[in-house]
Amino acid sequence: MVAVVAVAGAGAAATALSTRQEPPRPETAGGRSLPPATAPVTRGDLSDSSRRDGTLGHLGERKINAAGAGGTLTWLAPTGSVVERDGRLYEVDGEPVRLMYGEEPMYRTLRTGDKGRDVRQLEENLAALGFTGFDVDEEFTAKTAAAVKRWQKSHDLKQTGTVGPDRIAFAGSAIRVKAAGAGTGSGGSGSGSGSGEGALAPGDRIAPGSPVLTVTGSERVVRLSVPVSEAGSVQAGTRVRVRLPDGTELPGKVSAVGRTASAGDDPQDRTPKIDITVSFDAPDKVKGVDQSPVTVEIAGRTRHDVLSVPVNALLALPDGGFGVQVVEHGRARDVRVELGMFGQGRVEVAGDGLREGLKVGVPSV
Image (tube, rainbow, N blue to C red; front, side, top):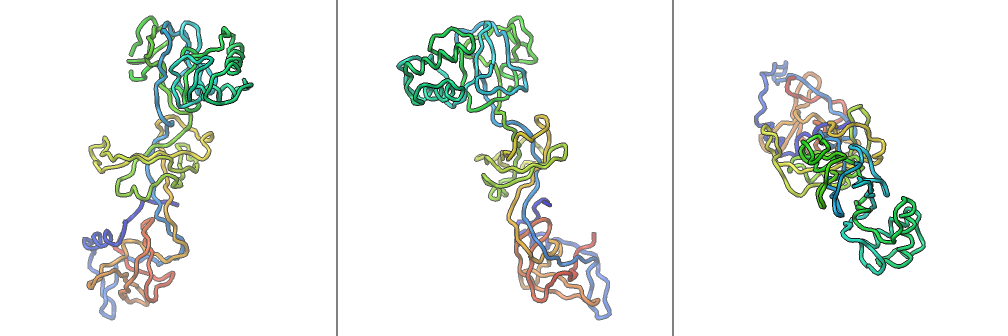
């Protein structure tokens, strides 16, 4: 359905045409030369969509840092697991730290009389978990404390009515555990054994503020890059189709477009590119391991019911403009054409006498 975007416009086509080399053409009875090959003029829909390689991954990446006085790590959420609201992230000295949703970090112990956005976040989470009886606002009241006590009782904790970073960590949504610790490489500090430098395992000693987990969002996304010259056709909201490694095709859209161009790491291709993030319409249907290669078909404009010819059928006319060589009844004639949209290796054309099914000259294959 979709092919790599061909020529961007008439100027590029002219450059290509000026360097085209064709073999000598046989003479016809009338003395005019015929092209070495022909292709039909077709009528139908034409799209300027494109196809790009991408990589399957997860949205965002951040660290969950240890809070409180530190201690011995006794449990960690497994790598690859998804932790949702009120789920355990890790345990220190047997005491669990649980996930709550919110963008504001959990930086203090909340108690009656406190005010702020972190108070609202806590109350929103308590209400979502069914611990109600208070107004969701930015004030920690006695009713909020009573709800906290009920939450603490549900987890067999001491019912203090206060809660701090040693019990709760905030993240914007459900998270997926990417790695234990900083996730960069071997051996934790202490009696446990990690899988690489910065990695952690139960039995390791952790200090306040040290990374305990490297996490991402639970949502599956695709990351790809496009040349800066094509960035104008890829905007937030642009529709796409993603072909997964198992052949499944799923719809989605561009959810983020980078603001900074980079030449990338490929020494064979230093073309400046920008990063694109694609989100799926139904992320729960996405199958495949992280970093799997995928193909992204980026939707573009579509022209309906138009005449088109292969791009390499275009001729640069001596007096300017473009034409095609129509072959009919054993003779060839040049016909000036007006160009429309380029896409899928073809170009929309309009010209005197052009119609579906006519043959036009193309270079030999």
